[in-house]
Image (cartoon, rainbow, N blue to C red; front, side, top):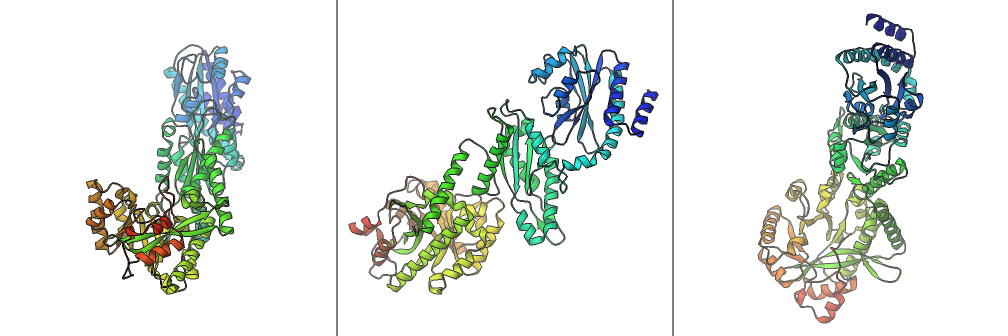
Length: 628
């Protein structure tokens, strides 16, 4: 044994190639143990194997293993490399880790080999560098003497690989991202090319796109951005084991997932990645929290190329970025269609804006005690090329586009401002007018500038209310939106929290950001007057709002019975079809002249004459209305 060790160490010291050293080790083992055939496969960072030494196996078989992706059930060596533990297969003909690969299985059996014991060579950081396999000509596992010999050979192999690693560092850099040390796009392409698309659900791609890299580069400098990338890469690399992580673009990473537990619930896996990314990265004067959007796709078994699965994952990522930035989306058939529909919606809305076919309609907000108008909500309407009036629900998809949302909000502000000025010039008091804004508007940072540009008259500005849906407060790490709302309110803009009660931990939002108006979601109103639970909740919300100094509006009031019950529960204001649907500026002017709270001769809105009801009528939406 001593002579064997000395001979191997001399080969390493003299600069023999890694293949030469491993060939010598394999031949010495085969000479020592009758009926044993030895082989060594290397494992690269992308998770694929390559034959390094197999002097007694057929060359065709050895080469056929090149670029085979490791996995939890990939023969003996592929499994050992994946789990990082020795794997003993006592019967290749029947073992379930071999049966999925009939070509390899038959090629081994044809050489008279019936069993295989594979041991991984693991470096100090826990990365599997190679597998050391003994094939047996009879169904059995390794003997104690064979185990002892392999332990010695693994130690010698570790020395040989360490030297080889230093020699081949230049080649390694070509396949590795210089900044993050993750496998680069070239490595990912090679790993992708050799994946099997025939077994449904056997692997998946999780694409991770950093959302705040550009902002950090612009705000704190590229050194901070580089630190962010390095820390994210380090976290993803540790998380990915035994799978593989890659950096394939400036702010884009991919995890190739084969672990059955992770594949079983990709949403849970994505949330685990968010947990890994969540801790802040500390600098001397500030901290940065990595923010990311993710998309994933699982091989379905019918793809003609692994690249198609990658395309599906990219589509899911793109869809998530456009509709749920900071969230996760898994590819499902139909995303392509929905994206096409969204692009079509964007084109239609863009054309309507350019052609002046976007206008504001208004729905009255009334006092429940005397049912007279104290305010209006502005609703976005589009006139189609054929003259049809379309509600915002028909083009809601388009408003997730930042440019479109900004132009649309600017248009709504301009129209509402002009209408408010016209009504005041005519002596028509409308109370206040609320305009719905989205998280996209608030993220852009230009909302205050638009208000300053359009509402130059303080008498109009003081009557303006911005409505923000509750989901703004629970966006995934969307603190900039909350900060924007806070800044607006500090500058004198009144804020209404819309659809209150539909989000998560709603009451905590009132602690974080006090508002001037609270609009109780219509899902609570719809259960009245019979539902005691809904009534109890509404009464509680009204009591809380009063202590906070906020006015309360119940949305979705459709019957006189609902209006009466809401008044008994302490709710002051109501809005809904019982009073009026959304109407154009002319119709709402007539309503205001007859039913405004400031009109000493005003009458209850529900007592409007037939002509006024006809003017206020509009087709009832088939689904919950969406407002801009």
